[in-house]
Image 1: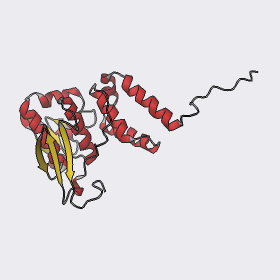
Image 2: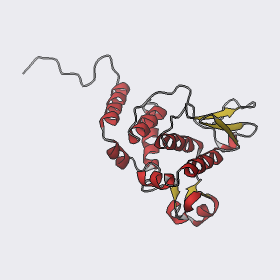
Image 3: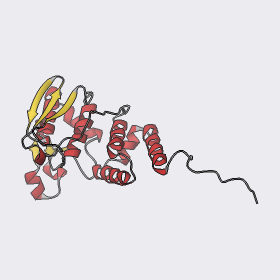
Image 4: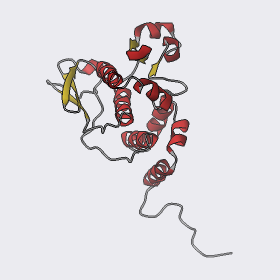
Length: 215
């Protein structure tokens, strides 16, 4: 019988959470973008996985950021100034502002901001929405951000009646989204349009007495 010490699975100066995180991020950075898009086509799948990682002590926001960057075929860069967009119910008394290439526009809600961003980009390129849809970045198997029929957005007729807005070219926007998902979509759309989030597109909240916009 050999008396040699067992080979450690994890380096002694690296805990299990760090090991999992580094392995996951290495996999994301090395996997082809098309495979990442196919594997994580469902937004609910991404959310579920992010929640599980967060329970292990891994930053869900960083995981999503790295994942979206890889889907877009772009390098991931940490953005310390970036914070999740506030929820619609928390913007009372505050103003949401979207700065698009130096032009500042104010909104009362997150979904208004996303809606106007898509309209602005579609107004500059009438093929933008079709290309965005076909890219698979916002049109997973179980959930779509944009589509050409209400039925393609939601199965439930009551949801269709309440949460659909019109976009140029006959496209429709599904608006049954929370603020975090809207913020994620703005980042994805920015990258797809060739704009740098945090530079070409900036989201700001002018707070008037609200300490925690997500509370």
